[in-house]
Image 1: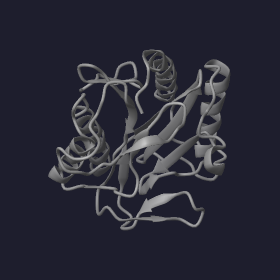
Image 2: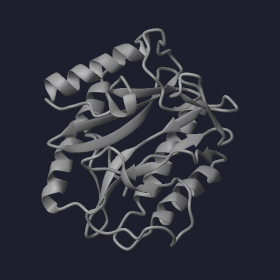
Image 3: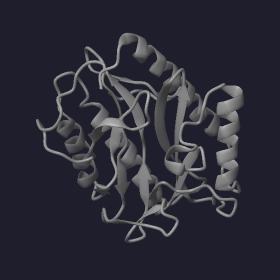
Length: 255
């Protein structure tokens, strides 16, 4: 679980490249695009502009380079030419990238056009919950500290966190140990050490936490049909705290 300084240097490269994918997406006019068009744009950008590999494609038999989760979709939304992004939607784009043998993983929930206040609210709370978790990362802290901070923030705003899915260790493989839950008790779980790398990725629901999986076997939605939002960064434990490896330009680190 602990990376060497040389491995961390390579992970920084992957993280910076993945951040640039989101910086490209930030310039798009999303309404009217199909989720498949977004998928294809991202694949071309990663392969042709960045000379990197979209790590999700082919992983676990998945055929696409990203997940696109709209409104009540919690995670693992599958790109389709028939799903068109609409003004007022929120859409989470979850992307992985491999360069030099190391993988970075990040996601962002986009507010599309004139989204209603409750949609903007759930996106804001999910982002704040992610940063609440990231702020707990330092040597000697515990994984339970991260999960507790995430769930505490969501509950404070009357929202819930999804428990079936969580963050994870990352490096040469997309999913490594440990699991990074979005709930927990302070002072419990694995003690963090300098050089550990993992994702923090809370999925926060406007309603209840319960989810169901659609018949495609991938797409996870809220059982009550209410909105869900997610944010994710890949982080490294440093000697003094935390480094966000996928931090985007214009995004101020809150850790």
